[in-house]
Image (cartoon, one colour):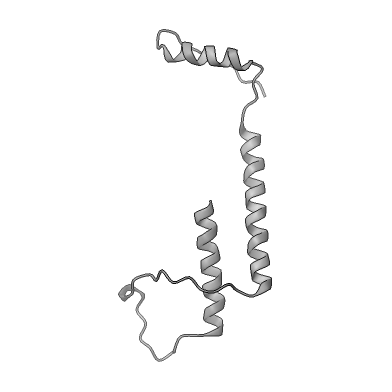
Length: 101
């Protein structure tokens, strides 16, 4: 997710930078002729930077909530769980779990 947020930040900052410093309209620009630049645009305006931070915080919080909500709860102790995993890995037994919602 961090890589995605970095790409989003770079894209938005670049768009703002291009509004301040537009390309010449007379150039025959063909995007297939250019290699993507490793140049990172400077930080955007304060308002945009605050919004980017708010987006990142919200995404991280929501991802954390959704991840925790999908982890099934177990009534087994840690020892019981470890024993079942060892039995399961022996390949001599079939271990089945019934998940109740």
